[in-house]
Image 1: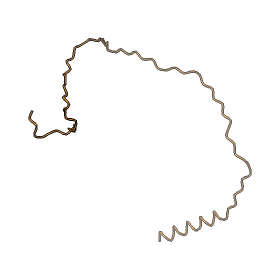
Image 2: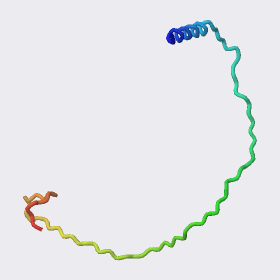
Image 3: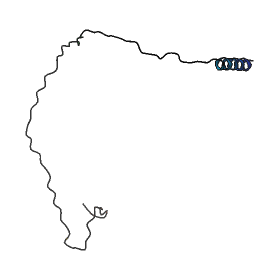
Length: 88
């Protein structure tokens, strides 16, 4: 029954809208608006921050020295692979 009522409403609405003829007779326009405003004021804040004392200091740092021995044999290829049989 609801389907029949819905279908009847839709068909009646479609016929009513089809019977209407709408013609624009005048152009629309936005209203003229004037705004006056006085200057505002931002809020004031009283902020107490922590005191920070920044100093610089020279500190000696030991840097390890690394020696690299290149093979003397020109046919030897140097790679980044680790020999698993090598002893520490």
